[in-house]
Structures are given as structure tokens and as C-alpha cells.
Amino acid sequence: MTEVGAVMKALKAALKARGVHYAELARALDLSEASVKRCFSRQTLTLERVEKICAVLEIDLLELVKLSRREQETQRFLRLDQERLLATDAQLLSLFHLVANGWTYAEIRTDFDISERALSRQLARLDRGGLIELGPRNRLRLRAPARFEWRANGPVKRRHAAAAIGEFMTSPFSGRDELLRLDVRELSDASLAQLRRRVERVASEFQQFAEMDSTLPAQRRRSVGMVFALKPWVFSILGALRRRT
Image (tube, rainbow, N blue to C red):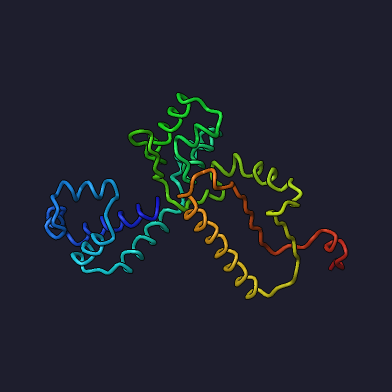
């Protein structure tokens, strides 16, 4: 789900909770009821109208944003049947990855070796699975959570994670934009917990950058992989030196 989608869903939930109908909202916005419904379905409400709706609901924008964030947090994962669908078809998984990263139908056709017929068929499968919305003129919109995570032991990770990490780590990491560091130090439990929180913040920033850059043309973006690994660990050569007790 996109940021805008989460805000719209939070607005709808607030309207339902307050018992406010579209007809009442239409009067407050000086629009027809049909126009209000269209604004919600197409997610085209202006900031000014959102503020007016908040006034009707007697909530402020900050509260609405908090509600939308909670909505996104509750939808961190795809449904299990959606993961199963993607895990069974590598091409389908790849196309979902592209749509989730803001690629348009035309950009996919230009840059990837897939026929128009095959692309339309696969996108229709993603649409039926509730992962994307395939609109008029092949307009693509993500319906999955914007910051989704694969389940730790879910179908996609079981099928592809080991191969993906192995392929990623075979690189020498010697390029200008590449970075690989392995440090082993001794930390207290408190320091380890604090470090983990900082790593999670960096991961969140990675997602935020990706969301902002998804509006750029595909030609101005590069696919970037990032792996975080942090755990209590002793290198085997040190373990061999440790006195047995």
C-alpha cells in the first residue's frame, strides 16, 4: 500500500467510525456525492480537501498521519497465498518487484525481454492476486503494502533467499559504489540492542529513499542490494583457540 493509499484508507476508517456518510461530506466540500466517491476511488483528494474532511471528523492532520502509519504497520506482510503465488513463478516475482519499485508498463516493455501478450497475462495474474491494480491504458498501481517484508520462513524466502544471498555475496565489492565490511568486536547486551535499533533505522531510511525515488523514470534509477547481518558470533579460528571446559 502506498503512502497516499494508507492515508485514504485511514480517512475511510475514520469516516466509518464517526458515522459520516459521503452525502454529508459532499455538503462540507461543496461537491456532489458522486464527485466525492470519485475522489476517494481515484485517490485524488487535494490537501485542502483533506483538511476540510479532518475538520468534519474533528481530527487534525497529524492524527490522520498517525492513523495511516498504524495502518501500514499492520500490513507489513503480503498474504500467505500471495507469497505462494509469487514463489512459484520467477517471472511473476520479477514483474511484481518492478511494479513495487515504480516501473510503468511502457518501461517494462522497453527494458525487458517479454512479449506484450505475456506481460499482460502476468500483470493480470498479479491483479487477480490483489498485489497490483491493472488500470485503463495499462496503468499500474501497487496494492500491496509499500514497505512489505517477506516472511522469515515464508514461501518466497524458502524458494529464493539462499540463492539470492549467495549470488549477491559472490561479488568482490570493489566497485566505486560497493561496500562490504565485516567487523567482529565484543559488546555488552545493552550496546548490542542499541546497535540493532540503529541498523533498523538505516533499513527504514533505505525504504524511504526507494519510495521517494520511485517517482523518477526507471532510467534514472539503479537496482541496489543491501544486506544487514548482526548476531552474536565467534569466528571458528578463535573458537578453536578457546580453552575447553
